[in-house]
Structures are given as structure tokens and as C-alpha cells.
Length: 119
Image (cartoon, rainbow, N blue to C red; front, top):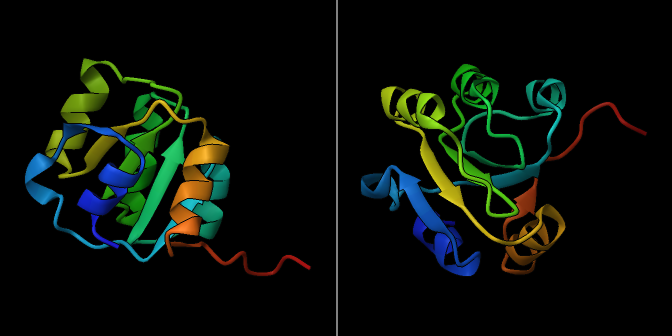
């Protein structure tokens, strides 16, 4: 799914990376625990989170995640915005809660990240 379609579906604002909205993502992962993000995700995944600290960008950078959606209308500070620019990471913000945002994306065909090793 193209990022611009995600932006439209979530009625999101683009904070950083407007020029990259034609990029594609394959999966979504909604989480506030960066240790879970590290354990379960990889590139071409969109991360939905309520956290707005620099660790979110650092985690995305390590995993080659190019798109982060901040839920509940959260907006990060300048340090996070600057890190996103440095790393070419697209930042969106939506007023939806995480549950609703994930549901909208799933309903429109974006699969969740498969969790390996969990029975």
C-alpha cells in the first residue's frame, strides 16, 4: 500500500517526508514497546505508535522502517523531527487511537506483521 493511501485512510497529517508519500509498505505493526518492534519487524513496515521520543526514530533506523504514524494526535518535538529528516523517515500523525488506526489499515488490505515463534 502506498504511504499516501495510508495518509488518506487515517486522515493523517504529514509532518516529515511529504516527498516520499509514493513509497510502498507491505505490513503494519502497532506498538509502544520498542523491544517488540526490534523483535518482530523489518523494512517495508509501517510503525504505529503513541511514543514520540528519539528512541522511536533510532529503532526505525536500525530496522530500515521508513514510515512512522503517531496516533492520538501526538506530535514529536524538534529533536525527533530532525532525526527523521536525517534518516529519510516519513512521519505522519493521526487523531485516531492505535486500535482504530490499525483496524482501518487492516480493513483496507494492509496485513499485520506475522509474529514468529509465538504459539
